[in-house]
Image (spheres, rainbow, N blue to C red):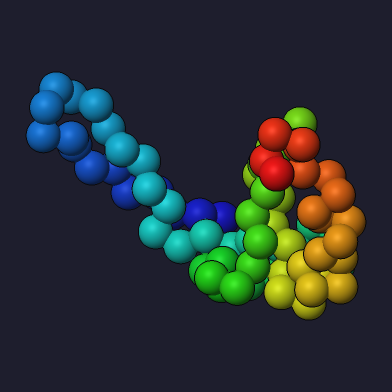
Length: 73
């Protein structure tokens, strides 16, 4: 369970909610990490935010590139 810390923004009363520590799981193999390593891939889509561990990213890089929209290239 993540603990959240709220910060007040200088202008107005808007709050910026930032997780203090976040545990994530690889969407493909289930490996967990806390906090998410910089070597992991983050992708967003219809299912929300998904993380892929470094090994799954390396093993499936062609599949990942093939799912990018043609506008990306």
